Length: 340
Ligand code: ASP
Image 1 (cartoon, rainbow, N blue to C red):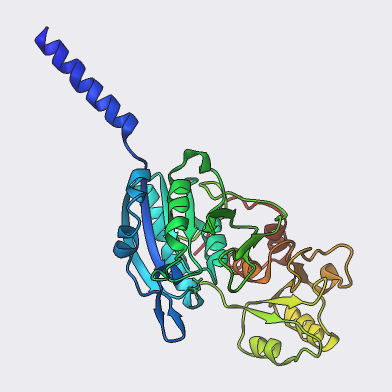
Image 2 (spheres, rainbow, N blue to C red):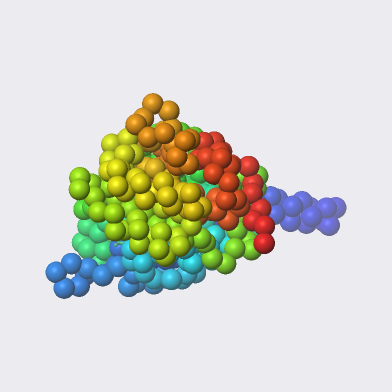
């Protein structure tokens, strides 16, 4: 009898522990203003380490059991493809341990939308991945980082967010990767979102498996304007870039002499994606002034240039076929394993 009550007590303890156990969230720190400190007439991003950032927000320990790592500590203007690849591989590795309910990444706001979109296309678990930043440095009296961190950790710990796109958190709001963009260079409410053509939550059956990828193809971006010079596009052609995203005026248009260089480049195998400098509306093959199908161009759809560049780089790890690349731009992507 005594033995039975003892076993029941043990069982109850185990059960209550299971019920009361906090979700487990891993925080990966990359820098940004959220890790910034005041300096000179402004501040420097990527100064404070993640142990100190988390220690400043004790309430986080009521939301989730946290562990963390310092991945890098940079302003996100210095983010690059090499870091993206190792970050994505690290996230896949962490989820593969089965230990974590979600992952939070502290990150600068300047290029957060790009990292989020890249990770959305390349991470293999459908558990929440949330990037978080701030517009004011960590030592500002009205620092916005701590409140954003609370929202981000809650979102990463929340089972309701399983099966969503990688998210970005700013001004205590959450945005999904495909639509989010930095809309304001100064305001704490700096992010906005367009309605994307389609959303594509990350997971085991979608996107690109970059396990074997060590370097992404060279793809550049060229900005259009009245009187636009032909020099930048010619420079990318001369440097043998595999692709260029043209940020056209209006509906993805470019002045005639730039377009001529683009047409020639396509004939030599370069992939040209047309996007627009207009934040809304996108660029589509139908109904515009440029005959994409005839000229071999690819329309970016609702993706802005910086996200179209990411998709083009990943697409080029798979294929050189323009029609196949057009498919990637048009609809959710079934898992593509990179061939060596
Ligand atoms: N330059 C900073 C960065 O992106 C700006 C910010 O985090 O808000 O790292």
